[in-house]
Each structure stands twice: as C-alpha cells, then as structure tokens.
Image 1 (cartoon, rainbow, N blue to C red):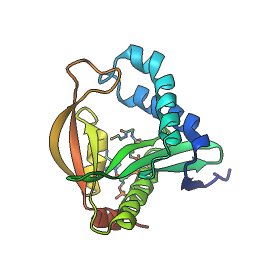
Image 2: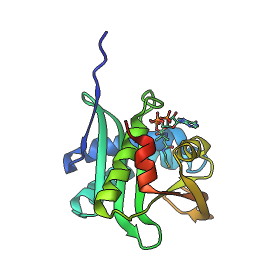
Image 3: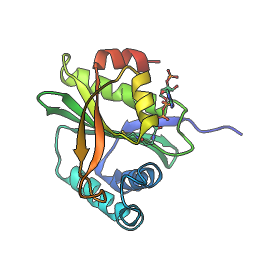
Length: 183
Ligand SMILES: CC(C)(COP(=O)(O)OP(=O)(O)OC[C@H]1O[C@@H](n2cnc3c(N)ncnc32)[C@H](O)[C@@H]1OP(=O)(O)O)[C@@H](O)C(=O)NCCC(=O)NCCS
C-alpha cells in the first residue's frame, strides 16, 4: 500500500473546526490531570472551537498557523504569535501532532517552520513556549532540539484547578532551531 505524503500549508479561517478538534483531542489525551475530566470531555471541544473561530476572525497579523495534512486528515498544527513578548520574543502558542503521527518528524518540521517565521519577522528575534510540568515527553523533545528551560509560572487555563498548574518557559535561538530541524 502506498501511504499518501504529509503536506504542509498555512491555515485559513475555514480550518478553525479541524484545528479545534485536534487541539481538544490532544488535550484530552495529554493534559488529563492538569485539566478536569469534566472540562476535557464536556467543554473543551466547544471552547476550543470558540477560541479558534475568534482567533481567525480577529485577523491578527501577528498570528500564523501552519498545518500538516495527510489528504483530509489534519495530522498536526503549530501556531506562533510574532513578537508577542518584548522580553521573550515570538510565542509558539500551540504545537500538536495527532496520535498515530507522532515520532514521524512532523513536530520537527513544524518547529522548523516556526523558526523560519521568526527569522523572517526579525533576524535577531527570539522564540519561546510554555510546557506544562507534567508534559515531560514534550520537554524531552524541546531539550533534544536545543530548547533551554527557564522560569516556572502557574497557568490558569479553563478546566484547571483554581490554584493553577505549573508550566515551564522554554527558550530557543531560532537560528539554532532552524539548523537542528532542517532537512
Ligand atoms: C511534542 C510533539 C509536538 C512532538 O512532535 P513529533 O511529531 O512527535 O516529534 P518528531 O517526530 O518530529 O521528533 C522531533 C525530534 O524529537 C526527538 N524525540 C521525539 N520524542 C523524543 C523523546 N521522548 N525524547 C527525546 N527526543 C525525542 C525525535 O527523535 C526528533 O529528533 P531527531 O529529528 O533529531 O530524530 C508531539 O509528540 C505531540 O503532539 N505531543 C502531544 C501534544 C503536546 O504535548 N504538545 C506540546 C505542547 S507544549
């Protein structure tokens, strides 16, 4: 059997429902314990749809979203907010690869795209993201690709306990990340 190739493209507002579906299912799989079961199972799908529809309709020029697709299956996506922080640079706000597609290089390709977006926006720019403390496998990937863990903060996303959930900032040199993820 011939497997169709994974292709990449920039997202459009019409992609909001598919992105929201993958976002919610990735949270259901990977963020259990950090978010309540009720939120993940009953609220996350509609809440993510509302967030992504709102993000696209805001027409925020700093928001860039890149998709990985295998025919009509959304295999992964990545979102950056260019120049989001004066101190830390561009925020990599979401990076999710669908179960069954992980470990095949899609995350690496999406991180390469993010690095190139930062460098095109500002050749001296920086890139950072937040990873939940419990998400040690994602942290291992970021360390492997040259990410440097920094400060810890409490996150207060919907569905999290009122006291918040610990997250670590991870910083990248976009030029270094681009080299490590090229090819
Ligand atoms: C984290 C995630 C985005 C990585 O994407 P992926 O497509 O599985 O990663 P890739 O296959 O492209 O691998 C990227 C690199 O990390 C390496 N890697 C993968 N898993 C690793 C691990 N557990 N420890 C160390 N390195 C690892 C790979 O070998 C590869 O490096 P290489 O090209 O030098 O061989 C993906 O696993 C995912 O969506 N996880 C669930 C959602 C999530 O946690 N998102 C992050 C939120 S902050």
